[in-house]
Length: 478
Image (tube, rainbow, N blue to C red; front, side, top):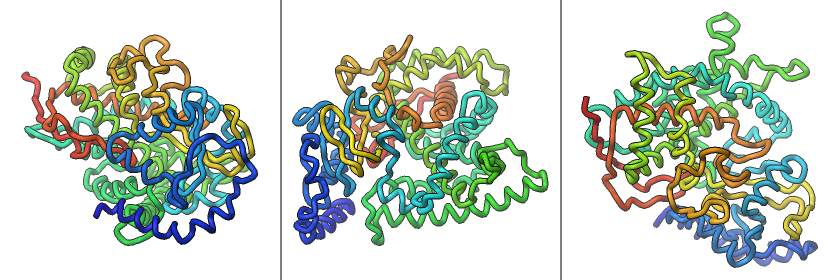
């Protein structure tokens, strides 16, 4: 039996015995003007349908069915064990993004809190605020410019080792290998392939279990994620302790990577960041810095295989840049700025196959949205598909059209693969650089064709081709 189905069966039978008790103590009885919708089964809610529609390749179905039946603005449900309001459309995105720390605050499922235990501590929440203030300074374009050549060097080594000389490859695992290698270098100054690969398997287990039902039983994705996080955290703590020694002895540069930056940064009171929280933040950055970008890269390869006219335009742009370089010369900031069409293509890919489906918030006070009451303590979910595939936001939403991003681009709050407002992903520019560097290197070397024309797409929790997107490589003739 599929372990996900088995897991939900266990939850279901537990819910039967608890259902009457839970319903008799309904904390929302005093809020009669809740959004329309249904809460589903006791305890399980609608989690099963929410997760399974993604695994079947149609994550937007859960959303679209309820928007059509209840409201295109907001509906209620119960997923991940929580009463939840799902806000929809550009207006919903604007409302949530604009009311961060006023009406709502960030919320993560229990699975995340248990995998990152320090994130549940009050002191750690303060550390997180410090971290979010710090990261934009490190990840802003001018700070990242010096990493472009390094990303190009890693991309070249990656293609030499894993693509060149092969007739067929599977894209998704190789994309993850590339983005993880880049992340290890930028965040930790680790670039030895063997050291990187030592991290890779536990990170894959961790990423698979982060957004999962938090049942800590042997064999579940959640248990594997907890075990992986403990192993990685132990390794990171050893790296942190050694780096502190190296910095004290001037064997490491203060600005060589994010780790050094974090270790030397102080708050307004002159206090350094806590080591365990630095380990957790590095852990989160390594996940965010490679998993979502690898999904985007994989779908770029998929769409370029299906759309030869788009491939040719990207090829033309990238080869013009390649011909302008001296032998052995690495990419630089000026080259990246010339990749306008390539980035429009990448954005259209992320519109149609967003690496993340959305995020969660928690109501920190009672408030009203679109005429409905949202009680304090309720969770809220915004989902990219309420705008990305909405005909009101993107005409002919299923059509691949990079010109949507020319000029001023899409209307505000409609294209949100990186979120928005104060919690917009601080790694947006970092992702842009590593994606464009990858596109440059793959376009210089290959055309390709899909080996499974009708390969299914699943979302678990990131979108991915069910078989990893195997392709036949067609090297360019000299």
